[in-house]
Image 1 (cartoon, rainbow, N blue to C red):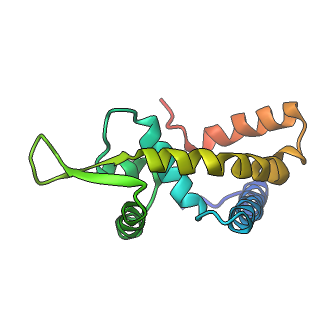
Image 2 (cartoon, rainbow, N blue to C red):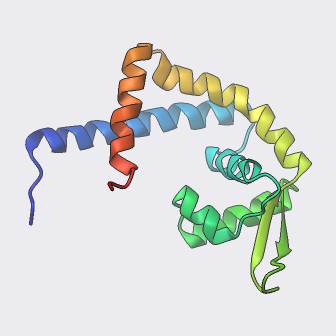
Length: 147
């Protein structure tokens, strides 16, 4: 069993603390503005980015790293608000396909300015443009599969 070095443990601890602090800032700004939690925005953005191609729930789950149970509940809430629609898969008729609605696109666009300002407050005000690029490059190494 490999034991992480002290510097790796320190990096992990600081990554977790920074993530929690940034997420707290974003979530509190969204709540103050009367918007739903960040996960709603993320789902709407993924569906909007898919364009005309609808996504199966497992594709959304994989892209967003949600547990199946949490995603199912979130999909139910988004559908109840009219932000997304579910349809039967044309391929097999049993599977579900998800798509964003015009109402979902509209609310995602309304959320973005608040979200953008929160990102700037949580990250941008603490880093120079060079530091932000460097951090982005370093973090990419943690989740991009190696060839």
